[in-house]
Length: 521
Image (tube, rainbow, N blue to C red; front, side, top):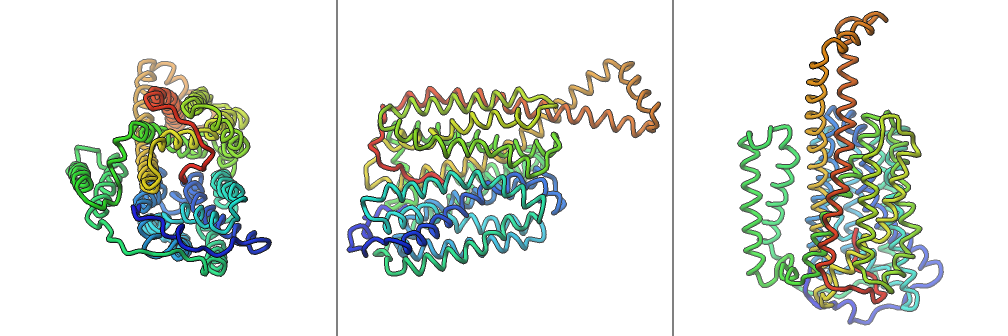
């Protein structure tokens, strides 16, 4: 992110919009944010459908999620430079237009490779959407109504995750998974046109500043190498494969080279000196690890519901919806609490609530009904209502105003990329857990050969052949193994979240001054 002064804030700005133009422009900007946040969640419940349509396994389908997240995370540090070099309006409108084009191409994808390529393109151009929409909303609202602008922006970022799973599930079940991307096309066209019409006279001042090409290239290299290693490791038998070893070494060497270059570069793409702040260091670590666990669990739940519990995509989306709904209701109250109480208290509450939510999931049974499935999601919504605002308040406590854009870019980059890594690790851990459970269950059944044979005989007595009976029993074992692996993942997640609480209390006391924290998309 740019270190240059905010020249656009210093130059004379046009008068704020009022009446109908303000309403139209606000909706257009909100839709730009909505598209980006929606596309980070809408594909989650559709992964089994997408994978089946393209003829790949569900765990390979996670490339659709990770490719977008990694590209989005890498593009975030460039946002400040782009806005300073070309102006906020041009950067935002161009990002919306390119995002719309990328969505259209995703809808036309003919195989997994092409879909992943287009998702990378979509993620790469989405970096400016959230910070750009927030900045422009503040520009068009009168100063005394900027709290309303932030409310519009906040509600958009909270409502989109609710709509994503529901909309993705409904479209996949009733139309075609391609429309989870194609739906962005009319929205994007309308958003870019309206934003340009209402904002072109409000372009911000620009300034020339060299971009850290070497630093950015090294960043792309090591993050890309690590993500590819995580995504392909399971299928390639991990470090028994020379390719995986090469990818791992490339990621390590690239990371070390990037750190060394960034430390000595005068205008780095990210400012690692921010980690000298105790609050920023431990706040970002806790934020990223907790978000990674949260992201992995949110990815796993709809896949498990569809592969093992017999849910269709629509109902899998509905099962996830309560968390977002509760977060929308409680967030305004959480913001008020933050102005009165130490952010560490609210952050601890969110960690405990997250842990409780995951623990309740670990108690699911094979005959759990829809209500039982959704109860932990209500608890998760309470956790989400305080998590982001409390953790950003902690992390940015003590950061100087001129460092805030860089700090926001670095923390968001780390969080988004950690979420992508978590998606890959989740499917790997889940599959390995299933394989281990299935082996153990098979060994147990082998130790009780007579009852097992008796079950086969009973199935044969009702008309099944020997092969069919063995297949039925095998499917039951596989299903039970998948259930055990899922519940174990939830239980471990609950434990990991609790381990983060001490990190929160290593930081200094943090109180909100009523200002909005930097955007967490």
